Image (cartoon, rainbow, N blue to C red):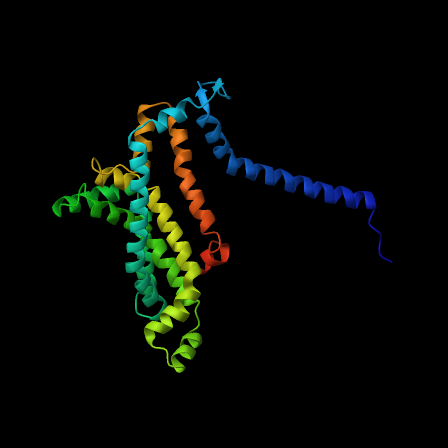
Length: 280
């Protein structure tokens, strides 16, 4: 005979499990959303002095100050221009390379793909300093092309890895079926391969766009004084004015990012991202 479980013990065990699940979820939400909530609170603080936990006065004083800056609109538009151009140029250069990596098995292929991690494996300021020496020799300092190259260096890993994984998930039989019915190589790529790999390419484009939007150190070193993007302008505000001005500018910088993510939510998902990082 099997012993029947005491209903009270059963409900106590289930309730205890649910309680700890709730505690873990609350800690995660506090850890994840706490900094954002604090950022919003600071952005609407007219007066906020340490050691106070809550601002002494709320209002829109620093919002008016930030939007009164003459360089705000120009820095926003400049950031968008750099992000769009960086994404398009990266797609033109990296997507053919990603397709070749996915389709051709050559010696050193894994090592070649891992080499794209080098730009993110070291402190970037040291990398930018060495790049700056090269840029001086080729007269790329304080130029539009130089800033675009710096932005591409930071995002090239995503634009190669993710599309390569996406192309690798397209079965050759589907391409061969299109070729059997008379489609040429280019038409097969545009009608079969590219649409099926589009989720991975879209995710890579999102990462590239957002990475270009938030690039600071490289733009600060290579672009100044001619090119002041939003992150550079925000850095200047943080160093020269109270933290409330920086919080306002941070929210302004987040708005286009959130809008872009909402527009691309169709292609952004764990499956598309995980598929892009597979090394076969």
